[in-house]
Length: 263
Image (cartoon, rainbow, N blue to C red; front, side, top):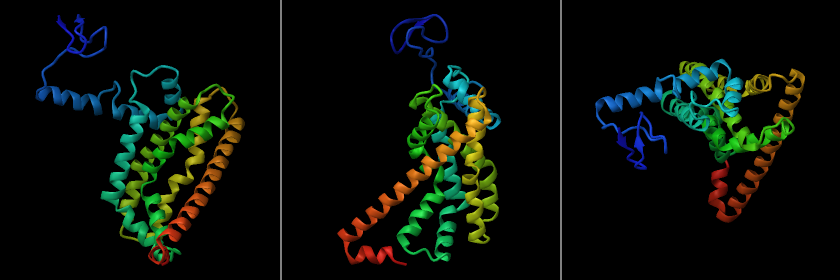
């Protein structure tokens, strides 16, 4: 037995009963190897374990986590950041999505270089951008399911699992396809890159049907349609704000800004 290095409480097992800190172990090669293995491979809180469970049934995993069964699962918000980081790295460094989509928007003669750059960034880093939008998505699902007993912060967790599932599917299925097509037609590449977004309504229906398993499918579909309507409304408002911002930017910066905004 020894005293805890954090709170000085006597440790009688592997963890301090007062603060939960693990019993002191000197950092050496075995320690580092065990930490890496624990983080990525161990079935308890492991990244691969959580990814596997999410692929099988993200709605059920989210419900288990919210209901309190959490010890075996990677933290959902952290998981979202890790997976989105992996997806962004693959898109930018391996597939070269940014350059290909920029070529696509140039090929389509986008009305302004500014908008072409904006659309390229949005399309290339959709997973990373979606992280920033999780609070907004949580608001839409909270509104749609407002009478079904979960608070806004629980909806943040739900949307973290939804985004994690979306990102895993993109990494495992669509990134390999886009890598194969990277030297082909930018138009074909663009169409393939948009398929994951088109699958989102189906993902939402499946997720919430598994999460609210006792509810009729019809009610789930109606609420998913409400979510989509709210997201579209938010998107329209965003476009208006961007347009206003571009207008203000143009007025403040004069001819040089106008030159940039034109083809």
